[in-house]
Amino acid sequence: MADWRSKSRNGASLTSEEMLDSENQRRVTGLADKVSLLKGIALDIELETKDSNRYLDSMGGDFSSSEGLLTGSMHRLSNMVGSGKNNRKLMCYIVLGLVLLFIITYYFISRVRG
Image (cartoon, rainbow, N blue to C red):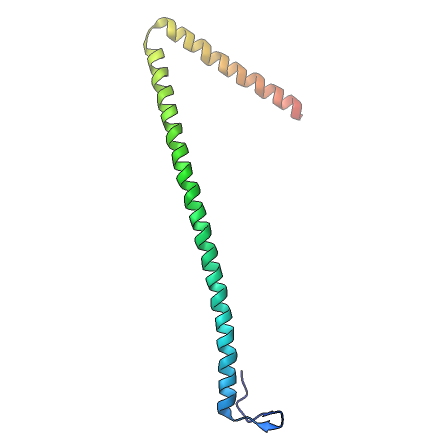
């Protein structure tokens, strides 16, 4: 806190009004520094937000294309399963082969790590 009693500067006595004015100037300078710091932080937040929005927009397009791909695959799979007994037998072989491939891959990976 400022001492409002009379002080001397270079041999001259300061009045309380001059001391108040110098204290106000010091506080105004400190406040201006804090405001400029907050402005910089706000601008950084704005840039980060814009970058995040651009990233999310591009992800939305990627998910849309993946959705179309998966929808088409499911449609073809449904047609294959529903078209007859021979295709069901083929489908069972494909599923069995994929499961075996997964088990073999898991076995080799666990051997390499172990």
